[in-house]
Image (cartoon, rainbow, N blue to C red; front, side, top):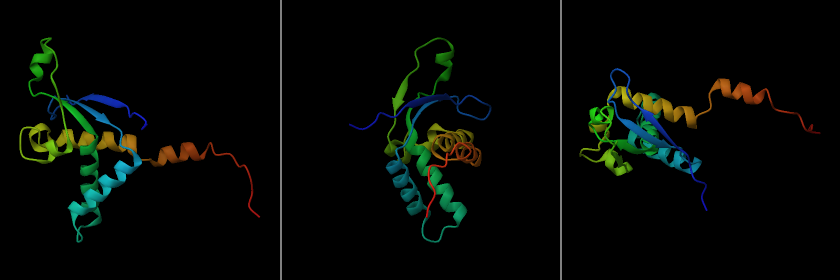
Length: 141
């Protein structure tokens, strides 16, 4: 049985954001590799390194989004029940009301990318913290 991945909920309510709430999940290592490969394919053979990384990140964060609130956030402020819509990767990619461009602002997508990086990439500070805790257990030779 596969390990259940946690779901995290965020409210994209800063200036320039959509005001939507989103639920995101963690990708497995295999899912992340598949998303990176799909991003590389979409960038094309002649893409610059910057365009390649951007396409991979875009593909990766899209695969983490599992649900989004319906558009009318005013109702939730007034105390009405929040209405969630489950999303698929196809929803986000195909034309329609749940397409990335229909759901999110540029600032939303940048935040979703940063959330993805926070949970899926190792930063220099994390590397130094973990390396500082490594214990020598043997020597070669």
